[in-house]
Amino acid sequence: MRPFLLRPLLLAGLLAPTLSACRYAYLPLIPKPVEVTLPARVTSATLVREGADLVLRARVEGRLEPGYLNVTWFDGARELGQDSVYLDAAQRDATFRLPAPNPGAYRALLSFGGTVLRQVELYEVQP
Image (tube, rainbow, N blue to C red):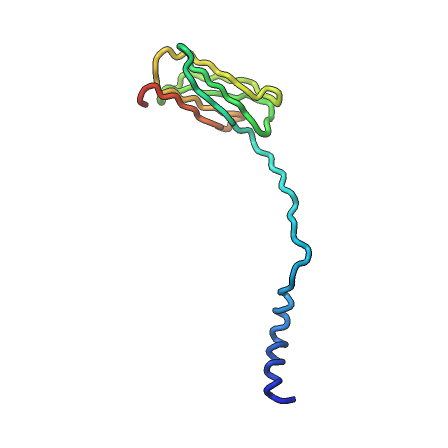
């Protein structure tokens, strides 16, 4: 065999294993569908003043094990009180009232199952 033909053949023989790995995949790889289960979350929460009371309305969505939605009321850094409402799959809305005749920097902290979900605020004075 002629020497000038031997080099390309030797090079092709060495590169053949790497070229065989570059082939077209005829069947597309389709992953299994992902099942998403979102934890309980507050989708809407409003804190408003109605006369001499503060009213907090909240709605919880997502995977919901029956339990208590807790609210902790604050005026600035001072805790004013706590309350809770039992929620299950049929009852997902909660309404809380707190007597608060004086204007303040009010906050309400919502938690469910020991996990803080949301904080809502109503600033009638500077905090």
